[in-house]
Structures are given as C-alpha cells and as structure tokens.
Image 1 (cartoon, rainbow, N blue to C red):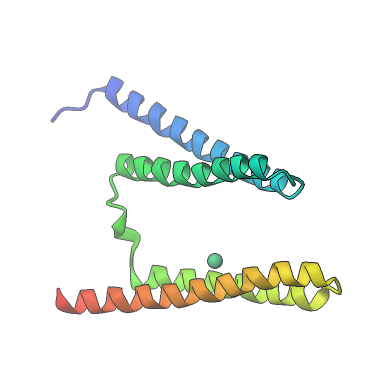
Image 2: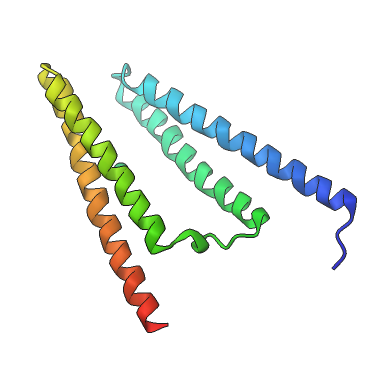
Length: 141
Ligand SMILES: [Fe+2]
C-alpha cells in the first residue's frame, strides 16, 4: 500500500494533536484534583470526581490511539524488565512518602500520606503478581 506525502502529513498532524490533548488532559486532572480539596458540597465534589475519572479514561484512550499510530501493539512494552522498573518506581515513591510521614508532625498530613503509602504497597504486590503471570505465560509459549 502506497502512502502519499499528504497522508503522512495528516498522520503527523493527528499524532501531534493527540499528544497536545494528552498534555491538556493531564493539566485538567491536576487542576481538578487541586480544586477538590477545597470543595465541601457533595454534589459539586461528585461532579469534579466525574471530571477527574473521565480525564484518566481520556488519557488511556488517547494513549491507545497514539500507540496505534506509532505501530506498537501496546502489550509490546509488557516485559518482565518493564514490570521490574515499575516496581522500582513504586518502591521509590513509597520510600519518599514514608520519609514525608517521618518529617511531618501533623496527624492529618501523616494519615493522608500514610493512605498513599498503603496504596503504593498494594501497587507493588499487584505488579509482582503481574510479573508472575507474565513469567508463567512465557513458559507456556
Ligand atoms: Fe503507585
């Protein structure tokens, strides 16, 4: 199949726009999450939670579209080494956050960050399980 110059330019423009929108969605997520901390009204909180969750979903879809244009299959990055790297990142986050807990004297701040540390520990367990699954799948193939 012959790809014309115009087609390539169109693809490039599409990719650039998706990349730009990817950044915009990230920005929206950061903005909404910073607004949420000051909102006490439940209905308005729910609305902003919806905007936040949709933003995460949009980033996933846009990333999928970009990967398709790049020609990578998405699961191509799902390697044991990649998962090990993710586990390292989660561990680093956990260590930094644990240090934050130690540095703070404020009970509320400590509790907030502690809940993130608990999540990170869970993420590490999930990633270790994913690594096991990848290993057992690759043994069968
Ligand atoms: Fe995490």
